[in-house]
Amino acid sequence: MKKFIFVLILAVASFWSKPVKAQSTYQAQRDSIQALFTYVLIELDSVMGKNIELTKQLSKQSSEMAKLKMEVENLLKKKSETASEIAKTKKLLSDQTALIEKLEAEIKRLSQPKKTQ
Image (tube, rainbow, N blue to C red; front, side):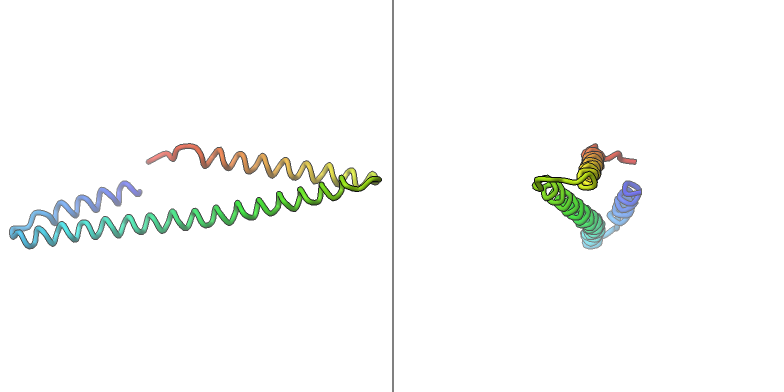
């Protein structure tokens, strides 16, 4: 879709760049550049919005990891743990491992080159 819009802009620009007078040719080229610039700004805004959202998600996951880490550390500091505390520690470690695996999978997915259509 993005390529289609870009090609459409170029087609319109080339059509506009064939007027009879030099002044209108200059204006058409200027309009073409303005249209392309506007398109690039829209794409930049889209990418920046996605980046902000991903940063929020990463921050949330980091907070969850820190919370789990603190809970496990607190449970391990106790000298005499009950069976329920040991079970809770194991569950927290399992949750933390699952969160790490999810984060690693997301990093791997985002690190792959983007496929163009």
